[in-house]
Length: 403
Image (cartoon, rainbow, N blue to C red):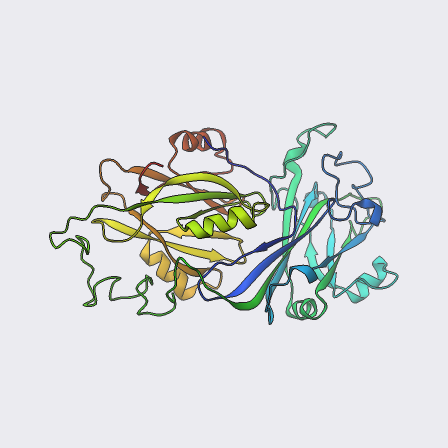
């Protein structure tokens, strides 16, 4: 049985959009103790440090800043930036007790930086949120920590305004500054774990070997928006398959490979052997191969099968899969968040499955903003019994064959 892992983004990672004909590529650049360390006056908490102790737990007269330099992370051929956002992971931000930690942003670090100077020249992004407002799970050593320390983590996300996005494109860097508990001189303290900058660049289209057709083309046989169906030129699919005139087709099953990324909090599924091998060979630092999730249908020639539509979100940083054609059409037509990548594979919808098929269970996490699918009964029971506070069981997504 595979274990579900929970971690926080902790390194610089290039996220491949992977969409056929996609025009954007998103990168994530992380500043934390591993990158800078407190000796260079970037005071992100050292892994395992006692969170309410110096030098990482700082007060109102100990404001500080850090720079995200993305020079080495810019996608090849990028022509501009579509959007950028930063997420700051912090510990014990006591907003309810009056703590007000303001985050400022500047195009670059000013010479002789002081809080007074930053207040005059910087852009106010907003206040850090408390663990009650924006709770998050961050694995941390319990040694020496205060009671219930694990419940005090929070994550606050700010979208960069247009002028700062433009400055980031010109400078390849951006500076953030925390004005800790700005009103009370002897007030609350703040501990930061990391700062994650996510930048979506306009970049050349990437061809997806799994979906050479254009998902925006209404005549594309891989496009769920095509009102004329996917196989039959007369506009109606043959429900009995396309190979045998009697409607009997031997199913062709393919392996669905499953990957886990501790950097993006997400799982990824693909039947593409080349795509799977690329992740194993070139991105092992980002994607851990977990084996065969289950077996799905390679095409739509089997009676009762249905396509699984695959979407990618550069802003959310993960893939989404659905067999709901209305949902897929709605996401394509109206969503600025999701890019349609085509049909991932084919499965059986509930009620159309053969006797030897098994249910694939669907979970959703509001805490992590992620989805998860498993055919493993033990794994499903573990999540329901032990991790229901993270993963909510949503039911059966579809049916497939055991690995």
